[in-house]
Amino acid sequence: MSSSVLPTGLTELRGTDIAEQTPGGAWQPTPLGADLVTAMGPLLDWSRVWAERRA
Image (cartoon, rainbow, N blue to C red; front, side):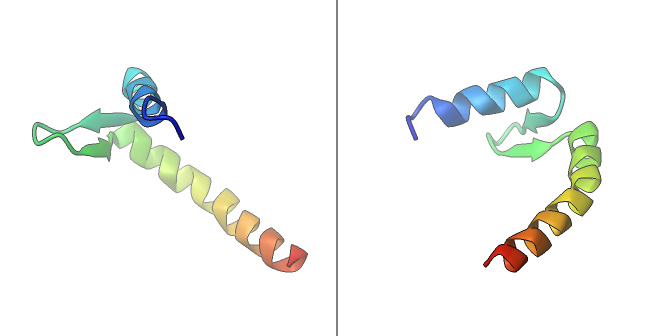
Protein backbone atom coordinates (compact mmCIF):
# COMPACT_ATOMS: atom_id res chain seq x y z
CA MET A 1 0.00 0.00 0.00
CA SER A 2 1.38 3.39 -0.89
CA SER A 3 1.90 5.90 1.88
CA SER A 4 -0.85 8.13 0.48
CA VAL A 5 -3.67 5.56 0.50
CA LEU A 6 -4.49 5.64 4.22
CA PRO A 7 -4.41 9.44 4.60
CA THR A 8 -6.52 9.83 1.46
CA GLY A 9 -9.08 7.31 2.73
CA LEU A 10 -9.27 8.94 6.15
CA THR A 11 -9.71 12.37 4.56
CA GLU A 12 -12.58 10.99 2.48
CA LEU A 13 -14.20 9.48 5.57
CA ARG A 14 -13.86 12.80 7.38
CA GLY A 15 -15.44 14.56 4.41
CA THR A 16 -18.47 12.29 4.60
CA ASP A 17 -18.79 12.71 8.40
CA ILE A 18 -17.99 9.04 9.07
CA ALA A 19 -14.68 9.59 10.89
CA GLU A 20 -13.03 12.44 12.73
CA GLN A 21 -9.58 13.20 14.02
CA THR A 22 -9.21 13.93 17.72
CA PRO A 23 -7.06 16.81 18.99
CA GLY A 24 -4.44 14.17 19.86
CA GLY A 25 -4.30 13.02 16.23
CA ALA A 26 -6.16 9.73 16.65
CA TRP A 27 -9.02 8.78 14.35
CA GLN A 28 -12.43 7.70 15.61
CA PRO A 29 -15.86 7.18 14.13
CA THR A 30 -18.36 10.01 14.38
CA PRO A 31 -21.84 9.16 15.68
CA LEU A 32 -22.82 8.57 12.04
CA GLY A 33 -19.76 6.35 11.60
CA ALA A 34 -20.68 4.36 14.70
CA ASP A 35 -24.16 3.83 13.23
CA LEU A 36 -22.50 2.56 10.05
CA VAL A 37 -20.38 0.09 12.03
CA THR A 38 -23.55 -1.18 13.73
CA ALA A 39 -25.39 -1.46 10.41
CA MET A 40 -22.50 -3.36 8.81
CA GLY A 41 -22.32 -5.88 11.67
CA PRO A 42 -24.79 -8.36 10.15
CA LEU A 43 -22.97 -8.24 6.82
CA LEU A 44 -19.66 -8.92 8.57
CA ASP A 45 -21.25 -11.86 10.41
CA TRP A 46 -22.61 -13.24 7.14
CA SER A 47 -19.23 -12.87 5.43
CA ARG A 48 -17.50 -14.84 8.18
CA VAL A 49 -20.01 -17.70 7.84
CA TRP A 50 -19.62 -17.61 4.06
CA ALA A 51 -15.82 -17.71 4.33
CA GLU A 52 -15.93 -20.66 6.74
CA ARG A 53 -18.17 -22.60 4.36
CA ARG A 54 -15.81 -21.88 1.47
CA ALA A 55 -12.77 -23.09 3.38
